[in-house]
Length: 226
Length: 227
Image (spheres, each protein chain N blue to C red):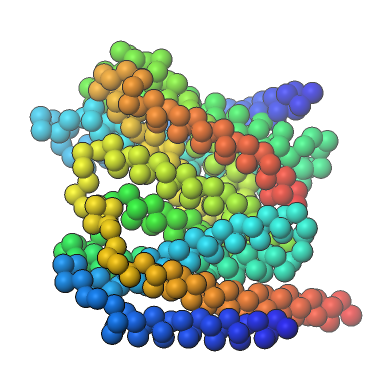
């Protein structure tokens, strides 16, 4: 059953991605006034997918703390890993776009700063997971970190916006350049769905790997105990 | 009862610290060193450089570096002779242990910060006395934020490999919000702007962070320490 869901989601996501690539390349109207604007069709959805992932990770971590079942821990780890991957993809595509559109790779705009911090929080999460051997201990620490991290991301998001907007007008603002052309929003949402499906597939694979490695560890311990 | 447990732990930590002066000496020297190093990052004698405008940033960077150094020791100190196991086996809830340690750390950090605030004012010719009570309030709130997160992460990383490295890497992304608020408020106060009006927002952010993360820490510290 789980295998079937996995393949179904994979097919859905691949179909959606190819369909939207086709639309982006041939159907959607050109936006001559914005450089390399097509990147937005993957840039924005990867951030949507990344926050979906962090949110799912928060829920799974809470479930782990409530029930103590390892499958929730594996799922939280997988989903946070995938979300971090989407965050990286979003940041990289943003940096490339900024070089074209603004002429600089990076600026300390509110959104960029908070996204970078969010990225750092979850890099710390993965580092902690790697440095704890004992599965129960690792699951508990990472569940706690996932919860703290999610709350912190919400805090960072709001407060940096206040911090930057209190300063004299920022040099560059994504918001002022907003306002999507007609027909531009739908592909973004479809790509979001595609990336979430893809992310869930990868998270499920990672979850199975986690379960398997725990099984192997248990067998090994059993073998040593004889 | 709970309060007495908290105070016992805090008194124990403070006594141990005052006898060895491990963390205090190192952190205080480190704090002063950073303040001296800042004078090479820019030219304090140059009249183009407005020291009060950047004073908040300078102070809080020195504070947060020294805090990471001092807080690292908070739980790591208990590893010798398996003291941590004894503390966890003692008949007191994990949150009392956490609060006791946080209280001791808070007192130590605050004392060191006040000393280096004086040194800062002396070295960089910044007037601090005009709004000293507001300034102390901001420092206390900011330090409590650093203490809560630092003590929590100290407990979290105590059994990890590369403990000394993991604590700062994980702690600083969490400290960005309170540090931003404290830096803004400190710079405002040193510039002669009183609390109120625009910067009351930052006071709220600082207070909100303190309240929310203190309650989260109390809820979660049991999982981290006892499991």
